[in-house]
Image (tube, rainbow, N blue to C red):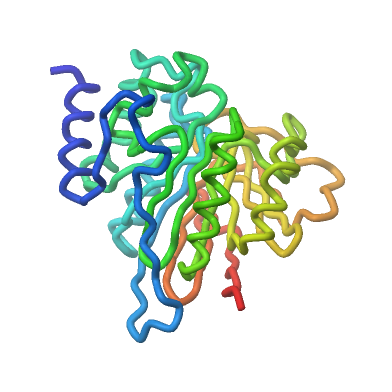
Length: 302
């Protein structure tokens, strides 16, 4: 049995056991949002919790990706078990071809699969180069319910977008989903192209910023995670924190000099994020060898 088939079968059993409800029907037959939102009352006496790792722009199958993966697993073992690994896209370079899944996704993340931690992936621009990402969407190892979808983790709702094509149906779905997510304590948006970025290779996406940032502000999104720029940066705009986490394994890009005025931090370093989600939302950026280099708390919405 090939590594890809074995890992895919294992992930299918894993996600089914975790109640993920993976939909393997053709994309055209899937509902726009097959994941129901789980509303969490903000005044609950016992607040549910979740811990999630986030990584982006990783899928090259080289040593930096493996070091980040090993650091994720070491954190899982030493500190607190992870409930999921979320990606901000570009999961498999160079073009998201299924024949590259073993070398650039399954093998580097062997330790994650062994620990039965499910992935929840977003699509990057490289991922959709082959058949619009359908192979990735259809493989349960990536934990996707479609090209855009939502899922709950503790008291948070994650809204995963396909920023490669922000078409009218997706934007209408986003409005409905964010409106319903107001009942959750935390709402976290995940996409590939950054509305705000301190990098020099791509910079911020003006189209994404124009289409999405007003929605994030209107509906009270608490945190926006993106990739595309191969570095770490954190900015605040319109009261919303924007984190670019694109240092999962691909070659790094430099930070702008001077930094954009809305930028709080920029580091050109391989890394992953840890989100500790409960009554508070704590975000920690960690390098494989140096540990945490940026930590911040997201304030609860009024």
